[in-house]
Image (cartoon, rainbow, N blue to C red; front, side):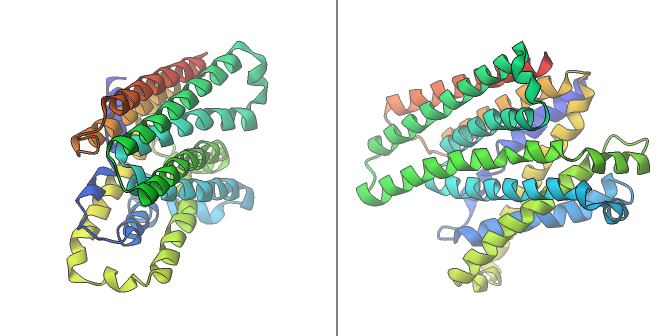
Length: 336
């Protein structure tokens, strides 16, 4: 159990930090020149190279799947990829702290509501369903408080009126939308039972069989996330920037981001089952709480809130507390 907690804590820190290296990209780097390689590494390269080491005969199992075994995980993975892409956009608009708070708040709420409605709608006729709804409502309240903090931050920094107000409003919208779309990861996992059974049959002594579902989701996400970056590279005519020697630093940053991103997923998927029968409830609460905290701290350490009015700073702190409370309520609901 201790090892499970350690893995989940490491995963949460990775999940709350994967956007931080982007802060160190050379000034003026086009968004798609950094995030395009990141999505390629995170959704294609790493799963294709590391996947076979974790799941024996990974590609053979995939080739034997029926259409129903992989279609829904890939489809909802496609939507999750859209969410990850829009989260990357929101970092550029409103910074790490607010983007993480808004995204994770919506992701927490819809990440438990959507699977419950799809796979276990009867739960809302029980006390557990009431707790789920309460937790989701608290998380959404945290998102609202985060949005208000964003507006206060904008005003206190006295940014350029038209451009900055447009970016801030767009950033809030994009971050909230990304959270809803990222929650599709939980739905995709719910549809991965058949694929997991095939992997478990081929790997009876392994705890890593669930990675096959992760791989399907990531590959589905590559279609949307990488596809969008290809479109941006084409429209903005920035393909040439990828071949410049100075972009080696950007590739290193993108790879580090991908390792943190996929490491977060892997640590959680391996650590949660080690926490006994209520591992998902305990693990989910710890993972999301610590990830939100890490993302917020990284935002403060990177100077995003320097010179900001105290009301805005207190607002994001209050939002953080509300989100953690919401996560705890949902974790309790999940354990009933």
